[in-house]
Picture (cartoon, rainbow, N blue to C red):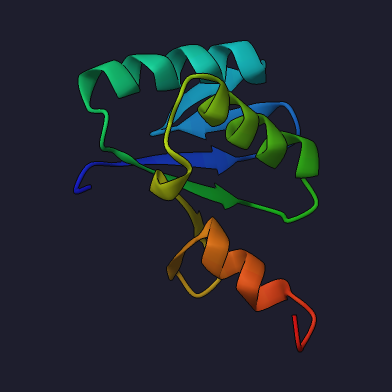
Length: 98
């Protein structure tokens, strides 16, 4: 998984996929489907300019799953620049003892 595609959630409607401005789930899904056909092993790195853009973040995740991007290939970019899997992100935000 050396090939990274970065999805920057600018706001709830605008996603920059490797710098290309996309609007809405259909455009994001079509772009990811094309990327998946070119390289089925790419890593999708999701980052947000604000964690308040829940709908935009959800759009990227939903579109990726709709076209078959393996969930194991999704990463979230933390504020410190570290990339974490969704399982690691879930574990970091889980209440103690769960």
